[in-house]
Length: 116
Image (cartoon, rainbow, N blue to C red; front, side, top):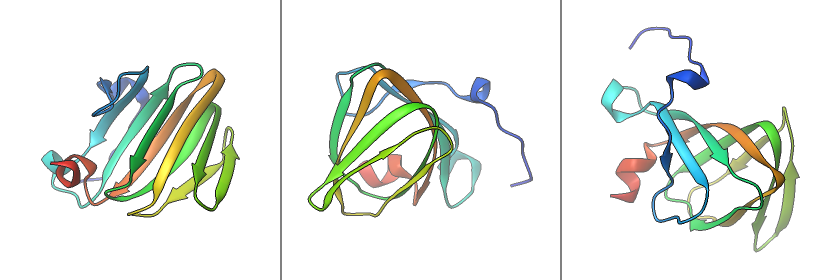
């Protein structure tokens, strides 16, 4: 794998697995590229919510909008330029607000393989 510059236009967005709402993921680096991590972009429509137990360690950088992430321990809210770390095994509810949200994410290991 070589050094690469990535933009959102490189992402092919697909509905997040197991979700019915307007939540989409677009991997730009994943197991097909030979690296140990997945890198991509997320897009959340207004007032969307997803619940999952994380199969991987996940880091999200909020680029636009605002998200709230709730766990048993409480809720954190993040806006543009803020980073949220979610450890493997954590049960989370990720909720977008009225403006929706766009994120960049990095997971270890590859989330698609972990969900298979």
